[in-house]
Image (cartoon, rainbow, N blue to C red; front, side, top):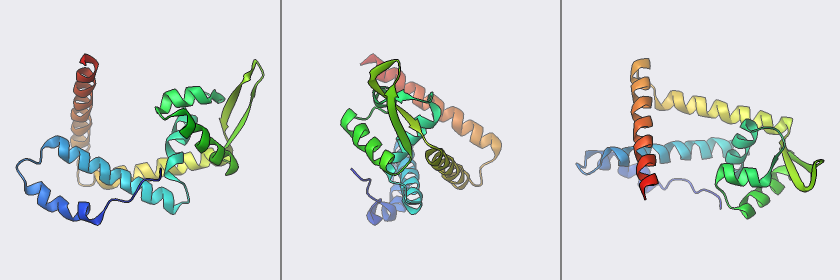
Length: 164
């Protein structure tokens, strides 16, 4: 399913939401994340890269070369049919190659091609630019503090999740 652009109504409502006393920190984080994801979608599409490729390319570039589809499913938390269909499209576009595992012919191993690696580098640049834009005007100390605080928020949510 192709991600949709943020509706203009969402964008237009942000200034009003910021004035609402019920607009808490997590709502702000949510809105910031939505804006950032929308930016990534727009810049990726501008480069002709479907949004569905980004996560798979990210993991393929950081895992050992020649991983199985099952390993990719586990790493991305996507459904096996989604990964299978997306990999077929990525193979068609020359971003990956798939070949049989010589040690176990039942397995198909997935490799990122040089073209896929170049796209991963472009995605990294888009992230760096987005990070610079989002954190503009913050000092290095403020950025470190923000990162530390967000890590604590993430840890708190993970700890709570494990209790259920």
